[in-house]
Picture 1 (cartoon, rainbow, N blue to C red):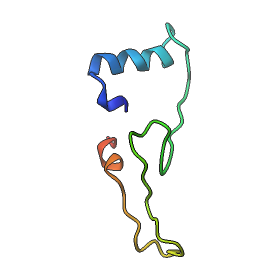
Picture 2: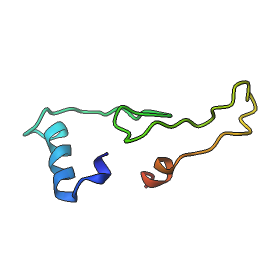
Picture 3: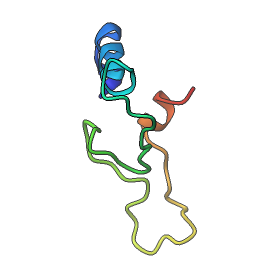
Picture 4: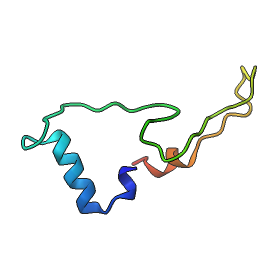
Length: 67
């Protein structure tokens, strides 16, 4: 969701959490396989019993937010 904001607004949001003028958070959580902040529901593998993960598939977000 952060990436959907204009860059200046995204920067303001980050600063409001992590800067000395904000809440001064010192770390963030990186969710794996879903997030409360995702604009959609998704799964990496919805096939019951797929212990070999043959149907495992990364999602669009996994490629969009990597540096």
